[in-house]
Image 1 (cartoon, rainbow, N blue to C red):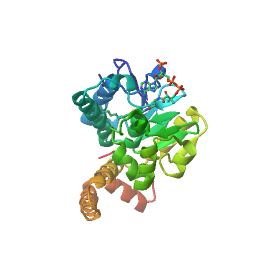
Image 2 (cartoon, protein in one colour):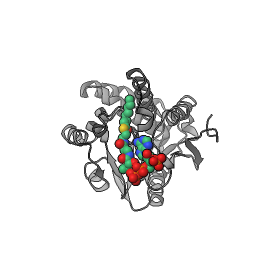
Image 3 (spheres, helix red, strand yellow):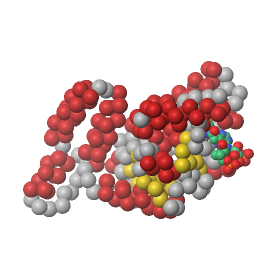
Image 4 (cartoon, helix red, strand yellow):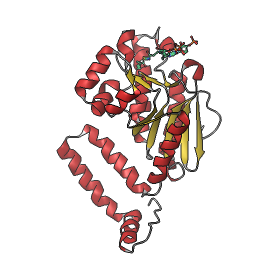
Length: 268
Ligand code: CO8
């Protein structure tokens, strides 16, 4: 079940070394039910285990259609859940967000339309967010008598600051694309979905020119820093910074600079 047509609620297609992952439940505004989450878990686990970083060098995540990236966790499925079932569902959603962070290659969330609740949480687990001007972000869980459950209480503060995150979560209000851009939630805006994907591909065209090994390690060290003090993070950075001096890409990159030629990185 990898890069095949076996998924029913997601699609994954690799073009020119970039994986295009689409949440594909357009009629339900791509809401995350257990099936979507399980299919995402299967796909992401394969991408991590098989270290497809060598063939899949970046991933773009988007939602089917023009209206929504993901309009949240599936409210109809959650409606009758017991506490135990909610724990299983919440753990699955959280696991998927962690798998996005563990992917060895960079992941750009391309938010086209609504990214609410679990949708905003999935986008925040990606490396960064590009969005269309019709994008609407938000954590509306309190309007349903819920709290964010796929990482929103933790990741939103880390991206936009604690007080702003509290205001957004306590009110459950919508955050339009312009505000999302101003507060650093969406780092670039585009007029249409087509331009959004083209913008992400342009960014990947730059990323694909540098050392894949160095990008992979940068992601790992930066993400692990979330759980560390600055002192611990600096120690970890130093360890990884020095370790990369044994890599072929480091020898190639520095030699190419000194020899005034373009580097030929292999990812080793
Ligand atoms: N869940 C299930 N179905 C949904 C969802 C959703 N989150 N969002 C939209 N849909 C469905 C609608 O029910 C509708 O289905 P149908 O046509 O069969 O009636 C279809 O998608 C189209 O939606 P609308 O007709 O509502 O479209 P509108 O353009 O009128 O409105 C909105 C668009 C404003 C996005 C509206 O659909 C909406 O408010 N959606 C819900 C947004 C929301 O509250 N999201 C947060 C959900 S809670 C959550 O994500 C918690 C995450 C952590 C869970 C942890 C669990 C333990």
